Image 1 (cartoon, rainbow, N blue to C red):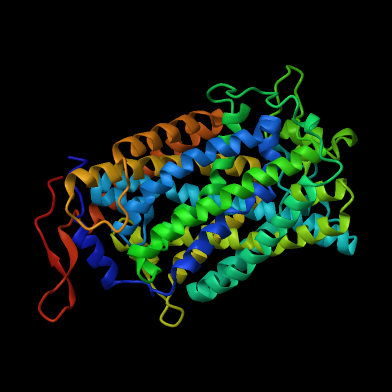
Image 2: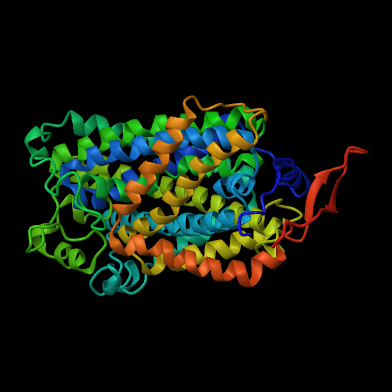
Length: 525
């Protein structure tokens, strides 16, 4: 039976203690990790892609995505505090619905984090090329070094996004050095980022250029563009949803958190609530000052974000100043309304701060690999911990290389949509896990207990499914195709090598308190 391998919670917790990562993160650091990931690409970069899908309705899109995130975060808070180990939705699924579905979740999380980190690297590249090189040094990178190929939605004459590749590898090196060091750097970058966005909101909402008429038509593509189109306010919500994965990344750091039963719920919910305010205010400031209408195709429907068709349109002079064509949206807005100096400063802030988003995403990805390897589902070399740095250095380097290659050749819009396919499936399964564990293990201590779980969890599932179906068709298809590849890997390699399938679990020996690996009767295949 495929669903018979359910790993006991006690074994999961004991496994983490046997081959554990160093606990260095406090509650405040954990919340900063979430803020560092949430406030990033969704605001600094995806504002352009979201406006192309929904126009001024981008504000409604942020509200829709935020509503789904709130209910998902509540589900995460209960399960993450209850199971404070690395692995996020993968581990929660292993303890509730079994190894087979847990594998599908872990495989989806690989898609989520790696592709999202590539997307943010591309976003950083836009600010580096536009603000740092062009505005300050007067250097314009040749197209073939500044963007991916046009056929993939990059830019005319594009071949490789060299800055995006370089930043991904630099962040990978930082993560290999150590988690605590990474968290300290992240805290500084988060402060810079929040200060920059606060200045942006203050300048745009009080600017003489701000005009409510620029919000009309508010929904040029409607609220609901249709399943598989990726258009309208709901389609935009499905795209920008990926910028909210910061609270998910917080849960993957549970195993490296001091007092996780208290700090994990604090980090999850606190970071999400803090960040949502900025999403709405910044979107309002950008659209109210320079407008945010999409570029329409000949059929009266917006060109797809991240498409070759849109890239060709944005290369035309009449669209040079459009919000939807900017690679550095917020700095561009300030320059357009007469604050070039401050716009450049904001570009510097993005240049400095977006690496914190890449850092958190690669951090989360490596921890998913780490725990899947520790369970025997992936080669155990991936869970090897460096003797000096105390980090999973092998898998961190591997992840960084994959992220760098994706960033080098793909545009941010497409990458965001692909990442969302994995994200929404993982969130869906966390809602399933919280309900299953309420039934299977009702007496276990829950530091955070979700009120109204039988309402909130189904709402999370429905919201995730609805947004998934509103992704562009190609992004919808990414998940089943990627999942099919994962099933081949599972049945050819992972199922036979699984520790649980072989009847081996790691437990704490009450005599002497030492962890040992002992055989149990394996589940029937």
